[in-house]
Image (cartoon, rainbow, N blue to C red; front, side, top):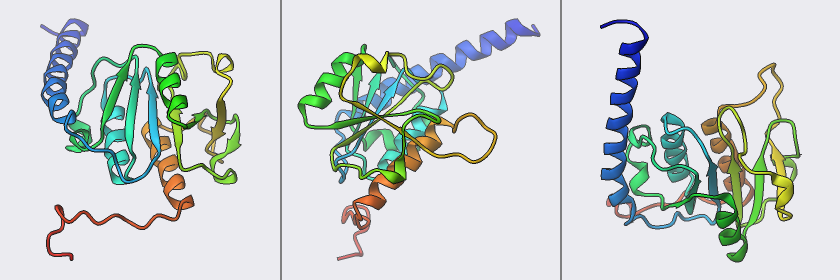
Length: 196
């Protein structure tokens, strides 16, 4: 067997393996504790491939409180390198439910879009910031103008590419958030027992 049919079978097998890994890791995620910072990420209909796992890895590194996933039934946790078990994950079928949940908790919601909005380094980010990242190709899967309490941010780019990879954009905005609140790196005694 060769050609496109073999490729489709391989993709189907990899998707099934990713779903099995997700189910196993999802149970561990239920024990995750919020990160040391108050910021959260909202992932809107991202592909279930490597970007989501990489975003969990960055979120854990920057102490992100939690990640909200909209329209994402599963993803491959392998690229997270174990970070999925440390960062709490909340799943929603629709954005309006996630939006209401975060607004009720006092969050300021920011959508990140290429070349639209205030540059992320030119705005004072509130402690309770929620950063919304859209699908890798189609962007946000909801109409932002229907949600009055959304603010627009952008990450300035100086090259010819239209946009950044979504996992890179998440890392940049998390770095800028932590830089602005001038947080010191957290020391976790359970990870570094020799530090007192």
